[in-house]
Length: 275
Image 1 (tube, rainbow, N blue to C red):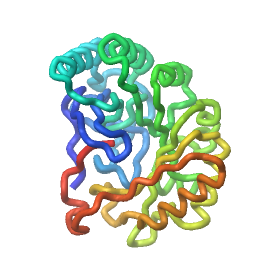
Image 2: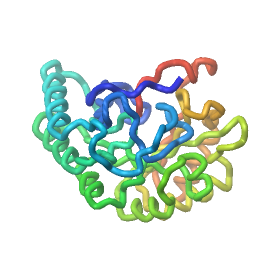
Image 3: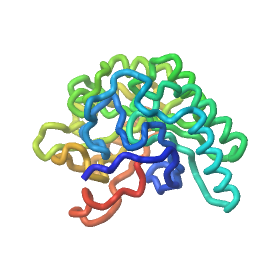
Image 4: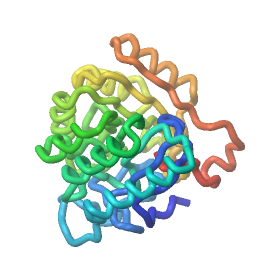
């Protein structure tokens, strides 16, 4: 079953395969998935009525509420010497859709600098809003920008991510956003409908990766229940093969295979983290 949407601004810290002990920051309305994409692998299920604009009136947490929540949480962590590796803006949708994203990003950095200056501030984004001026300014407040790119051709992009943006627009925006870390989810479909791990799809993705001048790539596969139940994880060996091709471009690549557990539990066990 898909994960339920988050109810609070702060969650965790949780153990992430990629980001260590990560304190999550959710900018989306409580209990409501808000996204402008409809990824087949999404752990929060299908996007119902995808949001294609950054509108008011959806119950977004205010910039002040986010500021207050992070201040309180970091102060509590400092009092008990809690270990936190990263502060990560993620949540159950696309955080940059928040109409006050730039202001929130500025406040997050300010709070971090004041209370916990040694902890990196990171964001996970689907990359579709990277061309918006205010989003770009907001992204500049983060130490680490993990930007989604699962496909290098329009057909795979449409089938896998179901977004309302053209892939060419996304690539154009990412090309001038460096430095970024690309996060790429590779999946296969038991019915043969979705597969971005084949030679042709990977070749197109590699070309796009080189075009946008990514500094690093995180290569992984599903480890929890996806929206499209027929999706299956890509074997670790194939993930490593893809990583080697990335490295041949002079780009650092990290592989994150699924955690080892009973395959029958793979789509039933609650995840360690939404990242």
